[in-house]
Length: 176
Image (cartoon, rainbow, N blue to C red; front, side, top):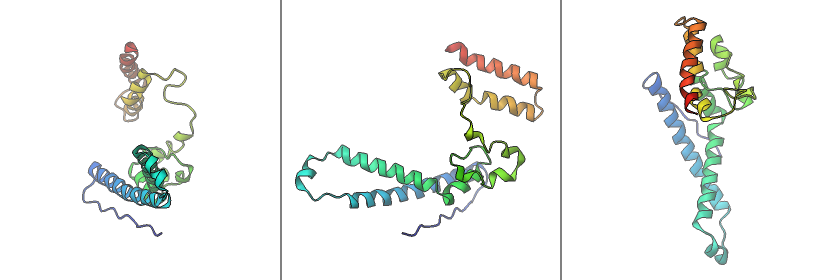
């Protein structure tokens, strides 16, 4: 089976371009998933009438969903699809697979290169504290990211940025 090359045409720049790329990739993944599920259904078709009577719709939907998920993940993590997406994110996401450790995004900008190995860490944000709703909320609100960014852009001194981050974090930890 030959694979179709996906051509991404960028009519706009910035966020809209990335969004359009994601939509194109999802659509291509959907098509690949349909092909995969059709192949699995064809290969596993049972001619036994007694078995067909007992088979439930849930079994069929479960196999179909699994095939769609596997096909989508395989397709989306292929180099032709994943690496352009990783590069377009400019280091916002770290690669989940070691195969992408040499992607162009990690060698282009030294400010981005420091994030190359973040997925190798065995620790979560907030380590050594417990995983809780509060730690998740602080992470989701980018408290630490904004603290570092404000110092890196000279918007605040390290002391002022840390004090602001502490104030913001206390908001969440007071509730838990």
